[in-house]
Structure formats: structure tokens, C-alpha cells
Image (tube, rainbow, N blue to C red; front, side):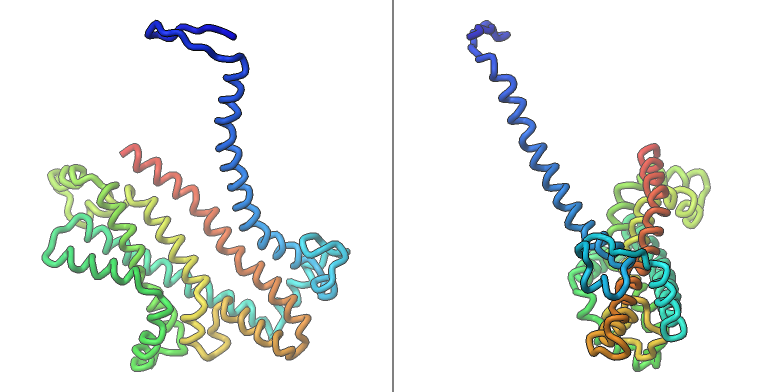
Length: 308
């Protein structure tokens, strides 16, 4: 047993293995957190892995693979499956993908522009009824989007816009959460002193916004853009209710149509299931590319905000 003297002059006794015991106790929470993170990674990665593996199989291996559902089959049939997907019904899948790009870009970019302008206005301009209007906006965040589909359908049907691309694009322009996010970020990330200095130097409202505030808002803009594009791309119920022409369907509703046909065993159910799997894999590739492409601007915007 070793006798140690504390800084206050008191003596304490420690066994030689007390320090390793404390180190093990400190490592235990870290190991538990790492195991939890690994479990989350597996939870989210396993469906994507299955989708990738299943897309390389033929129809027979998809339902009865000799190596299991999470491993590749005897052959590599991804190219054949892609050809069958793009050739199905005179290339209707490519039309669905084009529709999804149109809805996601128009709705995502439009909602981002409106969210930036509205959020900046709520944060930096004082006008009568600002708090009431923002409270109503927060209330709109709490309303599920699916609850507004039927009233929106009635409204657009009165305007004779149903079964047109506008029936999907116009409702996608409204993004209350994006406005809230931009308002919070603009209030904290754009100092009022910087705006006042720009006005003293003779900059007008628009020049101050575009040259001073907008660069500082870049991280929030990229975040809102990603959220808006992903939400519009993955939207299923709105275009399902608004559109009746299959040539106007986005890829989500188109895959749902194929799933209904496969469940009814129309036109060869097993071959349709393979098209559904490959089509689902192709449909997530643009989202991955969008995230990887915008990530550098996201990080760069954060660095600019910290330097300012």
C-alpha cells in the first residue's frame, strides 16, 4: 500500500491497481457510445446494402438466393436490370425521373428563395404584426403536410391546375420550417452592427442583403435547399392526389404504380419486382450526389460565418 500526500497536506492511501480501474471505468461509457453508433450505422446502412446487392441479381436469385439476401448471387446482372428498367413501357421510368428532377428543382429552389427572403425579413426588419405573423408561421410548422393535401387539391381544382406540374410545384414552394430556420440563423449569424456599417457606407437595402448578409447565410441556405429538395423528391402523397396522368408521375409514385401492378401479378409480377428494386436504387443516386456536391459549400459557409 502506497501513502500519498495531497496538496493540502493530508495523506491518502491508494492501491496500485486503482488507476487502471479508473481508466477502465472511464472507457466504459465511450465503448457504449461507440457500440450505439455502430448499431445506428448498421440500422441505416443495411437497407441500402440490401438494395445494392439485390439490384445485381436476376429474378430467380432475388427470391431464392443461394448466398442469402445480404450477399450477391451467382452472377452480376446489374447492367441487364438497368436496361430492362429503362426499356420498360417505352422508357416511362426515365420520364418519371425527369418529372422528379423538375419538381425537386423548381419546388426546392423556389421554396429556398422564399424561405431566405422571409426569414431574413423576420429577423432584421421590424414591422407591425411581425410577432403575430411569425407565431402563425410556427403554428403552420406543427400541421402535418398530408393534412393539407385535400384542401390544396380542392383549391387547385377550382383553378383548373390539377393533373398539371403546377399542382406539385406550387404547394412545394411553401416551407414554414425553412422560414423558421432562416429566421433563427439570420438573427444570430448576421450581426446588426455589420448591417449598420454597410448602411453608413451608403449601401442600400438590396446591396446590403446580397453583398453582406447573403454570404453569411450560406450554411443555412444550403441546409434549407437540401431539406427542400429531398422533401420534394421523396414526396408521394401530394403528387398521388394531384396527378392522374401516369406520364406526369414522379419516380416515387411511378415505383408505387409498379408495386401495385406487381402485387396484382399483372404483366409478370416477378419481373416487375426486379424493376422496382433497381428503380429504387437509381432513384436515390441523385440525392446522394446532391448531398456530396453541396457539402463543401456547407462547410465553407460555416467557416466564412466564423471568420466574419
